Figure 1: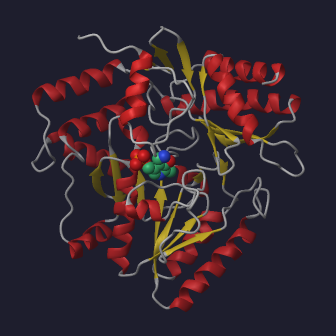
Figure 2: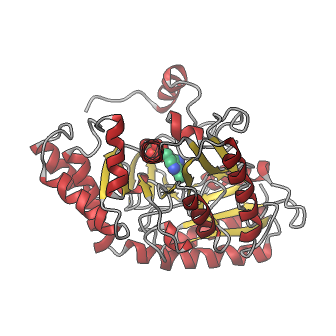
Length: 433
Ligand code: PMP
């Protein structure tokens, strides 16, 4: 291999040519070139515990996945135009994993594409355009998926620039929203009813509703009991379709459930997945009912050059095999419970921790300056993430106030690594930062 420029020259190259509006983290970021399981290694050979990676479900550089990809690349990889065993088998596997009746699969390359297509399916199937969504959510960067994304952490103009077919409801944040606690569902559903009535009065109908089943962008907050069931009923009464964005919460990350929507006891009309299903390889999918999929014909045929290519389908199949063979969903539950217990114990000692949200390996530690007023500890959270990097832990803030630690490690996280994270956080909070 030809020698690469050193780290600081590479940083100058990046600053000169990597377009500015793309998110980057850390003033002087470590140059990461290798990974193994839940660990990352920089050019100086320093090891970091990767606690933020919601893409690498299986862990980094998984040998079985690497071998499967290399073998398929050496045989064939081309667009998804022809008939390949892997495409047929992968589509069947996804349909089998989905609830009964959701048996039609579109393969794409990312979560944004999956949500864009899901919205287009809702438009095509209902002949309507209005979409209900949640405030503080993120669903992607394409035109339609961005339109239903209202997170001001990702786009400070999000609340003033949405198209007129987008109707956000109050975020059902049971920790800091206007209504609190797991039984606040009926209060939030009143807001949903009011928004739906406004759409009824506009007179041009409802296409659907999109939401995550666990409130991801706000830091893994569990929705109030009965919330999704209530919204799904009201949307379906108007002929709308319900889309579950499982890009982050699906695929076993919650531990107790393979799909996030199971935690709310609902069955969506359309499921979107990406991120973890490819373990870092660009892969996404939409799973829906046959009659909904067929509605898209009104707009012509769907085709994605690389979506569902032979290599992508082999990646998707192998990720599912490894998830099953290495019991990673069970590990997410076991280690997630241990990690959450460790973090709750820290909450008892450090008043800055206002709450520990989430389940499985989908957790959020929310920092507040005052447990009554819930004043977001935004600057403190940024400083804590910087200090954690010094201690060898990769961690980033999330939420509209950027005051929540986004804890989404690879599902192979070991008990030792979970304990290491809790100890590192304890040290940062104890030492001051
Ligand atoms: N939906 C959710 C819930 C996400 O978190 C993301 C990515 N952060 C997306 C959709 C978009 O996925 P992608 O980046 O693969 O386009």
